[in-house]
Image (tube, rainbow, N blue to C red; front, side, top):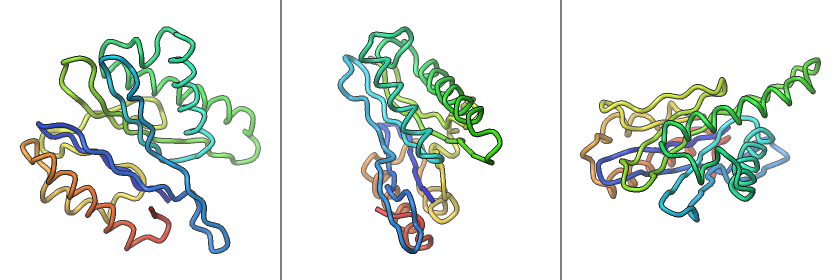
Length: 191
């Protein structure tokens, strides 16, 4: 199981993710579910992932390849954050459709959800929950955070504390408490 969350407050963005990929009795794996794109001039993106690991790895690899090869569009060339969310959603759908077609008769589930957050230039920072279907939503002013994966254990503190005017430091602490609550309540979520 996975747990990732991101919060958007007036002062910035907070990203928190676990790294457990398998909580089976005999096998425990880890893989980063937080991917940053920080070396792009005038922009920053963070992508959190939950779902099929092969799908998430393929999506991240494609995003990095498009940047490296100067593709249009790419995270290096997109002008608006909503366009970036749409672009990631399209790539996710392409990857899922490819795997789904290859494994159609095996009951294979290639679905993956993502949280994309970042900032381009001096435009306001933003967050998006990108669903496995490729569409996306933004958090609301009443709940300026997004969660994917095992949500129920870490949500109460976010509901009680996180607001748009919450300080970045407090939002980060709430994110860590949210993750700790989830790890204590679900052995499938871990550091």
